Length: 430
Image 1 (tube, one colour):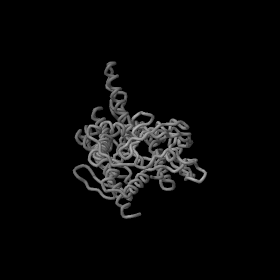
Image 2: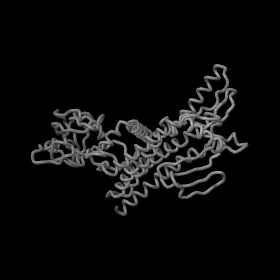
Image 3: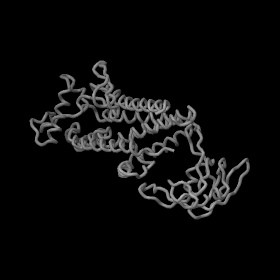
Image 4: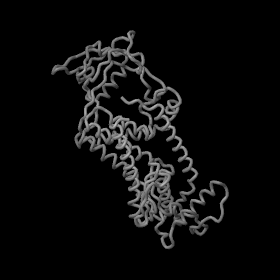
């Protein structure tokens, strides 16, 4: 790895650790503000590499920097008896019930005498929500801040409607090189050249490259008229759209026919106005949410690519190893420092946006699981109040521990698969 690559890797590592640390700060600050005793604030998992005790909290860094946590006392309430009093069960049967009771007992043992009111489960629902949403909200804030700086201050790499390159032929497959038997590309045959700026297709004006792509791909075999600006003049160039095979956006494991004329756009570092930031942020949020939702369906493709020569889906999920490789590629790119910084900020913004959505999944041990438990607790209390019944008390989140362990096992398995795939068959960067 080059010196620039090492810088890119260092930037990525600092960005990831900083994002994790601030995520946990988002939990820590409101928890302390509401009086909950926090015994640990840790970045990472596994053996502790460094720690210091400040007040009643141990702050530290652990060996595996793929997450973090704060330890709050009283996460799980004990049982309620028939009189509504919170008590520990005298005995338990079965491995799952034993696991639940052990967790309850450990939670209660952490509460010091006279500080029962400082247990997390004693918080009102609204305060539980603030504590558990604090971490994801911090990631959302960081994503917005980083992306805004990249957009407004530095400018981000943006595909333009100016032609960057004209393909000499129509390849039989998108991954093939041109051969003597391949016909000339429609763009080359029509006389398009690098530097031409496409302003309209069939008389309809476009200022977004992706819109032009959508129009062309939908018309294989048809003739379209491209209006291009060249040396201050506007030319009308008829182009017969060719046909080639591209990955199906709904199923990357198969290909479909699509229109092809043989153009690639130029890329410019463009700044956005502050007024345009909300719309760009909404697009950013929407794409990130869709990416998180699509992860389960795309894991099949990751498995196939990891254990075969099948090409990775460029829109599929990646692990921290994959994102680290992206950061190294940015550092080694022959580009200006401003361009690289903008790319790094955008990459870290995307990482924080992914953490935001991922942690909101309503399953333990993720933050969203605790949020769902608090919302259920609030709804149950309101229903009891409306019916004139006694307060049912805090929700027994400990009962969901078997689900939490199952989810954690699945997440670890997915992470290992993604890391392996990113090592043996990484997504090709262009």
